[in-house]
Amino acid sequence: MRNLPNARTLIFGLLVHSFVCGNAFAASEADFKQAYAAADAAERQAGTLRNQWLVTEAALTDAKKAAEKGDFDRAVAAAKEAEALAKASIFQAESEKEVWKNLEIR
Amino acid sequence: MASSIRVRAIANGETTEVQTLIQHPMDSGFIKNDKGDFIPAHYITELAFEHNGKPVFVADWGTAVSKDPYVKFAFKGATKGDDLKVSWIDNKGESDTATFKVQ
Amino acid sequence: MAHVDGAGKRVSMRWLSILLAALLPAATCAAAADDTDPAKEARAFRDFFVKKFPNVKLDDFANGPYSLNEDMRRQWEEKEQFPPYEFSLESGKELFAKPFANGKHYADCFTNSGIGVRQNYPQFDVKSSKVITLELALNQCREANGENAISYTGEDMAALTAYMAFTSRGKPFDIKIPDDPRARAAYENGKRYFYTRRGQLNFSCATCHVQNPGERLRAEVLAPALGILNAMPIYRSEWGGMGTVSRRFITCNSQVRGVPLEPQAEDYRDLEYFLSYVANGLPISGPGSRP
Image (tube, rainbow over all chains, first blue to last red; front, side, top):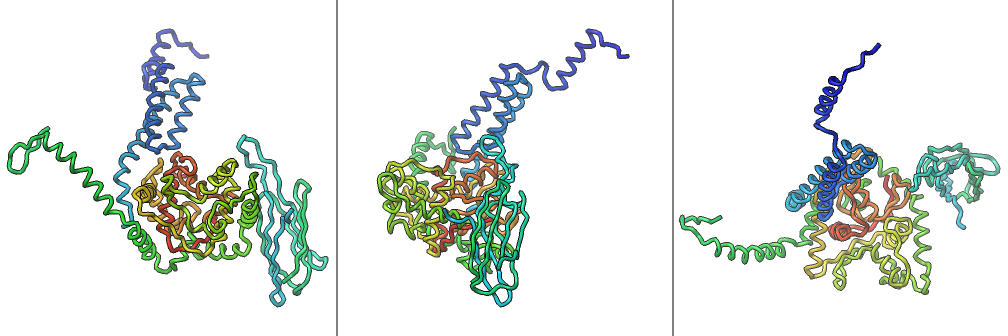
């Protein structure tokens, strides 16, 4: 026979759960929109450099799909991953502008 | 309409070496098209070579053989100028047959 | 931010920046024009591979991985008696001969009626200031005669280029870079693209085809970059069909997890220009077959 937790324990448990998950509160749609906008902007910039990665596109799609389902925690996480990947691809494109010469056969 | 079967049979002393290229999609039934639907299985189930009315090579095929199959084998008992008949039938009941001269 | 010269005196910032602004661009431009000598670079490119693979005959580089792996070569030579690209080749011959709705033919768009000309592509067109590949030329021909362009990655384009390559078999690549800074720039851009790392896997074309030819990438043996386009288009067993240069560039991009450009994008045409130029003198071996 299980004892039901009382209200205080419940609230305490929820807070611990949130902290453990890394968020004081669950992500909101607004959080998602902000994170997605940042990721999208970075990916567009990578696009102007003609150096986008497939995994970035996959993460953006993942974020959108999660948001459509209302899972904003996952959506924000995916959007942040997409932003990181997009920025890495930008870094790659920028540094390769000079570094490609190191590979050149002379 | 061109035949789906191409054959080159060369007699070398006792032995005749046969090479064949057959045009056939050999769809396994496991591949999806762009729309996400499975492309139905469409493959050769039997391939037979006959020399002087006798079968010299018979193959029972399935989905493991890939598109436009190539076969090479050798057999004894033929001479230059003999007829070699090749035929196949697939799982949809389609078939093709052609006859070639041993060179 | 002020600059202090060797004598310890403060040089005027304003004068310095004007001086720098005046000198730097000129210095860079002059360096660029003098540094790139495509003929010299092509020789160096060829010498690199000849030195790396001393037992391979120069012309044999046009056979890609078969020049570097005996077992694969044996199987390929057997298959060449009945090559898998034969159906596509026949289809290409028919397509090439078929007239457009206006009665004209592909032959009307090419010198020598399109027979034995594949080795001259890509070309730099000074009028439109762009690299014209064989695939682009075919679609330009269609559009000039009121037809729709066909897919650069589809079967028909593969069949047409297979036929044209076949009529040029054995002829050495003869790519020209006209004395025009835009043509040089296209060559340079193709070269840059070839050596630039891309995709999440951070590979450049050179990573596989300069640093690791003859090595295995999963089950495949990597081809050397020298002569890598000579066998195009290719029947790839992996594809179960014939594929164009456009298709190959796109799939190579995807394989390093880079988002591919659109077919016949400027970078791809310039890349084809560079790779074809450095293979000048090597024979056309297309259409080819690969694992």
